Length: 106
Length: 127
Image (cartoon, rainbow over all chains, first blue to last red; front, side, top):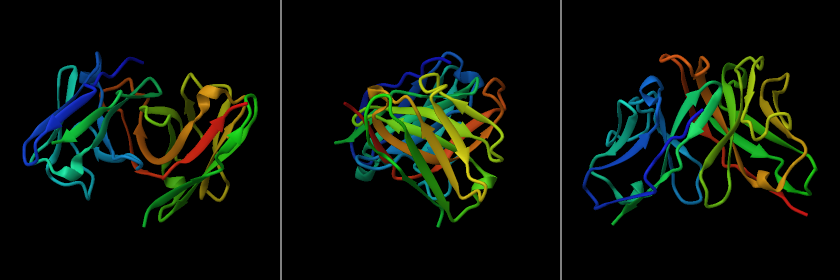
Protein backbone atom coordinates (compact mmCIF):
# COMPACT_ATOMS: atom_id res chain seq x y z
CA UNK A 1 0.00 0.00 0.00
CA UNK A 2 1.04 3.66 -0.14
CA UNK A 3 0.16 6.97 1.46
CA UNK A 4 -2.71 9.26 0.52
CA UNK A 5 -1.80 12.86 1.24
CA UNK A 6 -4.34 15.56 2.02
CA UNK A 7 -3.83 19.14 3.19
CA UNK A 8 -4.54 19.39 6.92
CA UNK A 9 -6.91 22.29 6.51
CA UNK A 10 -8.80 24.37 4.00
CA UNK A 11 -10.97 27.42 4.59
CA UNK A 12 -13.71 28.97 2.48
CA UNK A 13 -16.28 31.72 2.71
CA UNK A 14 -19.97 30.79 2.56
CA UNK A 15 -21.25 30.57 -0.99
CA UNK A 16 -17.79 30.12 -2.49
CA UNK A 17 -16.31 27.07 -4.16
CA UNK A 18 -13.62 25.08 -2.45
CA UNK A 19 -11.58 21.99 -3.21
CA UNK A 20 -9.91 19.31 -1.14
CA UNK A 21 -7.12 17.35 -2.80
CA UNK A 22 -5.80 13.84 -2.26
CA UNK A 23 -2.45 12.80 -3.69
CA UNK A 24 -1.27 9.23 -4.13
CA UNK A 25 1.45 7.75 -6.32
CA UNK A 26 -0.81 5.17 -7.95
CA UNK A 27 -4.06 7.07 -7.70
CA UNK A 28 -4.51 7.31 -11.45
CA UNK A 29 -5.16 3.55 -11.41
CA UNK A 30 -7.43 3.52 -8.35
CA UNK A 31 -11.00 4.54 -7.69
CA UNK A 32 -11.26 7.14 -4.92
CA UNK A 33 -14.06 7.65 -2.43
CA UNK A 34 -14.65 10.65 -0.18
CA UNK A 35 -16.21 10.79 3.29
CA UNK A 36 -17.46 13.72 5.31
CA UNK A 37 -17.25 13.54 9.10
CA UNK A 38 -18.86 16.27 11.16
CA UNK A 39 -17.76 16.65 14.80
CA UNK A 40 -19.08 13.83 16.97
CA UNK A 41 -20.66 12.06 14.00
CA UNK A 42 -19.95 8.99 11.93
CA UNK A 43 -18.44 9.37 8.47
CA UNK A 44 -20.81 9.87 5.54
CA UNK A 45 -20.00 8.78 1.99
CA UNK A 46 -20.21 11.79 -0.34
CA UNK A 47 -18.42 10.54 -3.47
CA UNK A 48 -17.46 7.06 -4.67
CA UNK A 49 -15.62 5.74 -7.72
CA UNK A 50 -14.01 9.13 -8.28
CA UNK A 51 -17.11 11.15 -9.17
CA UNK A 52 -20.31 9.23 -8.37
CA UNK A 53 -22.58 10.91 -5.85
CA UNK A 54 -24.77 8.69 -3.63
CA UNK A 55 -28.45 9.47 -3.44
CA UNK A 56 -29.19 12.13 -0.87
CA UNK A 57 -25.85 13.90 -1.29
CA UNK A 58 -26.34 17.47 -2.53
CA UNK A 59 -25.29 18.29 -6.08
CA UNK A 60 -22.81 20.87 -4.81
CA UNK A 61 -20.48 17.97 -3.98
CA UNK A 62 -18.48 16.68 -6.95
CA UNK A 63 -15.40 14.57 -7.46
CA UNK A 64 -12.71 14.39 -10.09
CA UNK A 65 -9.28 12.95 -10.67
CA UNK A 66 -6.30 13.87 -12.77
CA UNK A 67 -3.11 11.87 -12.69
CA UNK A 68 -2.00 11.25 -9.11
CA UNK A 69 -4.50 13.70 -7.59
CA UNK A 70 -8.16 13.28 -6.74
CA UNK A 71 -10.22 16.35 -5.90
CA UNK A 72 -13.41 16.87 -3.95
CA UNK A 73 -15.08 20.13 -4.92
CA UNK A 74 -17.87 21.82 -3.01
CA UNK A 75 -19.71 24.53 -4.94
CA UNK A 76 -21.68 27.16 -3.06
CA UNK A 77 -20.26 25.96 0.25
CA UNK A 78 -22.64 26.14 3.16
CA UNK A 79 -21.96 26.39 6.89
CA UNK A 80 -23.23 22.82 7.31
CA UNK A 81 -20.36 21.61 5.10
CA UNK A 82 -17.83 22.44 7.80
CA UNK A 83 -16.36 19.04 8.63
CA UNK A 84 -13.39 16.75 8.22
CA UNK A 85 -13.07 15.15 4.78
CA UNK A 86 -11.22 11.90 4.07
CA UNK A 87 -10.25 10.32 0.78
CA UNK A 88 -10.01 6.54 0.51
CA UNK A 89 -8.66 3.99 -1.96
CA UNK A 90 -8.31 0.21 -2.24
CA UNK A 91 -4.97 -1.40 -2.95
CA UNK A 92 -3.83 -5.00 -2.70
CA UNK A 93 -6.58 -6.06 -0.31
CA UNK A 94 -5.97 -3.04 1.91
CA UNK A 95 -8.01 0.12 2.36
CA UNK A 96 -6.09 3.36 2.65
CA UNK A 97 -7.40 6.64 4.04
CA UNK A 98 -5.91 10.05 3.65
CA UNK A 99 -5.06 11.88 6.84
CA UNK A 100 -8.13 14.08 6.58
CA UNK A 101 -8.73 17.73 5.74
CA UNK A 102 -10.50 20.07 8.11
CA UNK A 103 -12.80 22.34 6.10
CA UNK A 104 -13.62 25.59 7.86
CA UNK A 105 -16.41 27.81 6.57
CA UNK A 106 -15.51 31.31 7.65
CA UNK B 1 -34.46 2.46 7.01
CA UNK B 2 -30.98 1.02 6.47
CA UNK B 3 -29.06 0.97 9.75
CA UNK B 4 -26.05 -0.57 11.41
CA UNK B 5 -25.68 -0.67 15.18
CA UNK B 6 -22.41 -1.56 16.87
CA UNK B 7 -22.14 -2.93 20.39
CA UNK B 8 -19.72 -4.78 22.62
CA UNK B 9 -17.18 -2.07 23.28
CA UNK B 10 -15.81 -1.47 26.71
CA UNK B 11 -12.78 -1.36 28.94
CA UNK B 12 -10.26 -4.20 28.81
CA UNK B 13 -6.75 -4.78 30.06
CA UNK B 14 -3.82 -5.28 27.68
CA UNK B 15 -3.77 -8.86 26.45
CA UNK B 16 -7.50 -9.21 26.92
CA UNK B 17 -10.28 -9.92 24.44
CA UNK B 18 -13.52 -8.33 23.28
CA UNK B 19 -16.15 -9.22 20.72
CA UNK B 20 -17.81 -6.39 18.84
CA UNK B 21 -21.16 -6.87 17.13
CA UNK B 22 -22.60 -5.07 14.13
CA UNK B 23 -26.34 -5.57 13.77
CA UNK B 24 -27.96 -4.74 10.45
CA UNK B 25 -31.53 -3.63 9.85
CA UNK B 26 -33.32 -2.55 6.72
CA UNK B 27 -31.15 -4.69 4.47
CA UNK B 28 -29.94 -8.25 4.12
CA UNK B 29 -26.44 -8.49 5.53
CA UNK B 30 -25.65 -11.55 3.43
CA UNK B 31 -25.97 -9.44 0.30
CA UNK B 32 -23.23 -7.01 1.28
CA UNK B 33 -19.69 -6.88 2.55
CA UNK B 34 -19.07 -5.34 5.96
CA UNK B 35 -16.05 -3.32 6.99
CA UNK B 36 -14.72 -2.23 10.35
CA UNK B 37 -12.94 1.10 10.62
CA UNK B 38 -11.53 2.59 13.81
CA UNK B 39 -10.70 6.07 14.92
CA UNK B 40 -8.72 7.32 17.86
CA UNK B 41 -10.56 10.43 19.14
CA UNK B 42 -9.15 13.49 17.44
CA UNK B 43 -7.30 11.40 14.85
CA UNK B 44 -8.01 10.03 11.39
CA UNK B 45 -9.77 6.94 10.13
CA UNK B 46 -7.98 3.59 10.08
CA UNK B 47 -9.36 0.60 8.20
CA UNK B 48 -9.38 -2.61 10.22
CA UNK B 49 -11.02 -5.40 8.24
CA UNK B 50 -13.64 -6.45 5.70
CA UNK B 51 -15.73 -9.58 5.21
CA UNK B 52 -17.23 -10.42 1.84
CA UNK B 53 -20.96 -10.65 1.21
CA UNK B 54 -21.00 -14.45 1.46
CA UNK B 55 -18.59 -14.47 4.38
CA UNK B 56 -16.08 -16.51 2.43
CA UNK B 57 -13.33 -13.90 2.28
CA UNK B 58 -11.84 -11.69 4.96
CA UNK B 59 -9.02 -9.19 4.80
CA UNK B 60 -7.23 -7.40 7.62
CA UNK B 61 -4.94 -4.47 8.22
CA UNK B 62 -1.41 -5.53 9.11
CA UNK B 63 -1.83 -3.90 12.53
CA UNK B 64 -4.52 -6.42 13.54
CA UNK B 65 -3.71 -9.47 11.42
CA UNK B 66 -3.50 -12.61 13.52
CA UNK B 67 -5.27 -10.97 16.46
CA UNK B 68 -8.68 -9.94 15.06
CA UNK B 69 -11.21 -12.19 13.33
CA UNK B 70 -14.25 -10.99 11.41
CA UNK B 71 -17.26 -13.22 10.85
CA UNK B 72 -20.97 -13.17 10.12
CA UNK B 73 -23.59 -15.18 11.96
CA UNK B 74 -25.54 -17.95 10.26
CA UNK B 75 -28.71 -15.86 10.26
CA UNK B 76 -26.77 -13.20 8.37
CA UNK B 77 -28.06 -10.36 10.51
CA UNK B 78 -24.95 -9.62 12.52
CA UNK B 79 -21.24 -9.34 11.88
CA UNK B 80 -18.74 -9.93 14.66
CA UNK B 81 -15.24 -8.64 15.21
CA UNK B 82 -13.40 -10.88 17.64
CA UNK B 83 -10.44 -9.00 19.09
CA UNK B 84 -7.72 -10.86 20.99
CA UNK B 85 -4.35 -9.91 22.46
CA UNK B 86 -5.53 -6.34 22.72
CA UNK B 87 -2.98 -3.56 23.00
CA UNK B 88 -3.19 0.03 24.18
CA UNK B 89 -2.93 1.14 20.57
CA UNK B 90 -6.19 -0.64 19.78
CA UNK B 91 -8.01 1.95 21.85
CA UNK B 92 -10.45 3.71 19.50
CA UNK B 93 -14.02 4.13 18.38
CA UNK B 94 -14.88 1.19 16.13
CA UNK B 95 -17.34 1.68 13.28
CA UNK B 96 -18.89 -0.96 11.07
CA UNK B 97 -20.00 -0.03 7.58
CA UNK B 98 -21.99 -1.58 4.75
CA UNK B 99 -19.49 -2.02 1.98
CA UNK B 100 -19.26 -2.44 -1.75
CA UNK B 101 -16.01 -3.79 -3.07
CA UNK B 102 -14.78 -5.48 -6.18
CA UNK B 103 -11.44 -7.05 -6.93
CA UNK B 104 -8.24 -6.80 -4.95
CA UNK B 105 -7.37 -3.21 -5.64
CA UNK B 106 -4.76 -4.07 -8.27
CA UNK B 107 -6.90 -3.41 -11.33
CA UNK B 108 -8.28 -0.13 -12.61
CA UNK B 109 -11.77 -1.62 -12.43
CA UNK B 110 -11.51 -2.44 -8.71
CA UNK B 111 -13.41 -0.34 -6.21
CA UNK B 112 -14.22 -0.16 -2.52
CA UNK B 113 -16.57 2.16 -0.73
CA UNK B 114 -18.64 2.22 2.45
CA UNK B 115 -22.09 3.74 2.07
CA UNK B 116 -23.75 3.25 5.45
CA UNK B 117 -21.94 3.57 8.77
CA UNK B 118 -22.99 2.81 12.32
CA UNK B 119 -22.54 5.24 15.19
CA UNK B 120 -19.57 3.35 16.60
CA UNK B 121 -18.63 1.62 19.84
CA UNK B 122 -15.70 2.61 22.03
CA UNK B 123 -12.91 0.22 22.98
CA UNK B 124 -10.47 1.22 25.69
CA UNK B 125 -7.41 -0.94 26.38
CA UNK B 126 -5.61 0.08 29.53
CA UNK B 127 -4.15 -1.32 32.69
